[in-house]
Length: 509
Image (tube, rainbow, N blue to C red):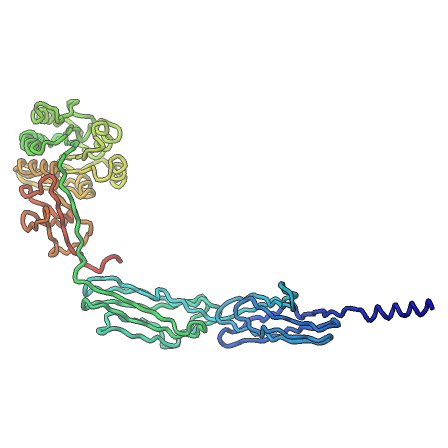
């Protein structure tokens, strides 16, 4: 009886056993290796086996990763059966694609198993720079050329089979292949070739040329390119100034006191009243001092200023006491630099004033300074645009000889004046009254208006004062690259000056 009961219990256990599926996936990775994009693809197989005792129900599959495809619908694998899934890889360009295929069983929210996917696409990759070219608005007749580069950014040779060019009529924008061979062009990986686009506008109509590049790039077999431009008759620009109403100026005269300067110092003293009368007409807020070409200290220990009761007399007194017993090795630039950086000039010069330096000598400067260093020093000591040098010197380039006056070319002083786009006068001129009057007016009121562009088309220069066209009383000075007003026609304090002009050439390179 006990034996019967034991056997009956064993029979009940076998009858109640739970049947379950068991998923087996192979392989765990599909490696497609390297395929030639656009020409090759590959298919590999995943096998899903059921090692359990019940049906394996796969609800669906999911693929993550570019260029991989498979049938993602669900299926059933019977006990001890198997099912195969074909996974295809088709690369599109030069790329490395990683991904995975997940297997979801019936009723599961998370994947039960997964297979890693890995593949490489080998291909040429075309890159064109610039592909969209805008020549802007050059002047009619200007010739502008831009280089266009085709580069292979892939790992397989790039073949350029043709370039299809279409242009508006007349074809002002052209494509120039230069010395390149006939098609096809073969470009190695990381290699490049270049051709040119030229623009010579002959009218004001908008111009456009398209160039479609046909190549072996599987992703972009036709690469579109375009060049556009729109010429203009004029590239006129307008600069504007306002004539200053209040004149705040500090003046330093640097006078050559060598033995040959007696006549010139006398002329300066005799005509100082002309200078001062014109200068004082503008009611300036001024300070004025004198140094020499061998002494950086103020002569007579004096500063003539707006509060002086007799500014003309004081100035003449200083000049008469300078003398001609100084060094024959004139160093006007060095004395001025020393006075400005370490001496009394720096103390006298106000930050809100224009600092004017007037050099007078019958010889070139012998300071031996490096001029570029001098310019940098002055610019570091003075606010931008507040330093203006003038010079009364021997004519450039050969000096001057107008009996009884004789002088060597005033190099050094001339270079400083040119650097700051200012003016110089001949020391050999017999009528110093006009020169000093002109100098005084230059200091007192702006007559020189420098243009920003160095290549103006002179015939296009136009001048307006307070909005009204001014056709006389001024001229263009090529050496200064400036419009220079005659003194009697100079704009008054507070006037607005506009100068318009076009430039030669095709604009910025």
